[in-house]
View 1 (cartoon, rainbow, N blue to C red):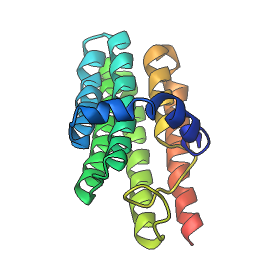
View 2 (cartoon, helix red, strand yellow):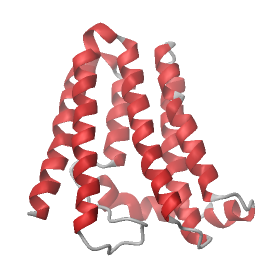
View 3 (cartoon, rainbow, N blue to C red):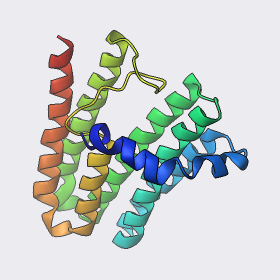
Length: 192
């Protein structure tokens, strides 16, 4: 929901001013996707080794780089199916790495909660991809983007809160799982 309402001002204020300068570097948009992927995966060891501040930095660095890749691709007129696919795979890999990192903080007490988070993401992603098959493309993105209760921005906010406030992990992870699964259910009923 945050993406639906605040993406345009975020894009205009924080991303668009950087795009012309970054485009002059003549780097492939995939470089930014790979950077987002690498910094997102690095959240896992940062959490496992007890460095939550570094994990937060890496998480939000990953999120920011993820907003740059598509913007640069569109600016340079270099969008591609391969780039869109890499972006989707990168996003899910980062989310999985973060959840595994949250698990690594305290495997005994967080195991089931992390499994529920992963299961909710799997349900949500499945409905996201299936809705893309059946709904006509009407956005600037390379694939149909079906908005929901929980989108990437909300997930990163939840992840950030779980990292910053480990004592609140249980209620945050339960709420995360319910909202993510609820997004999948909403997409299913929106399609029918």
